[in-house]
Image (cartoon, rainbow, N blue to C red; front, top):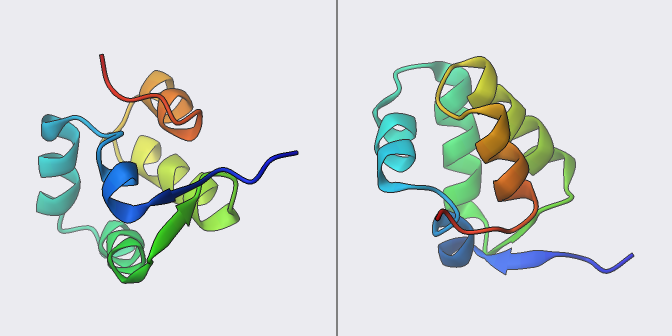
Length: 79
């Protein structure tokens, strides 16, 4: 299967402004850990366990819906 790698900016563009603001406003330590890791990355592999697990964490914290997580992992920008 093809490796699906995006720049960190292109990955950020997969989130809505409201999602991005909620994620970065979160005081949750695990959410901060995930966002800090992504800030340090040059690229984001949509199939990497950090991305898969990190987006699952965001769903569990109510910062993303399951449908939006699926869209983000598919590389689909918000409508």
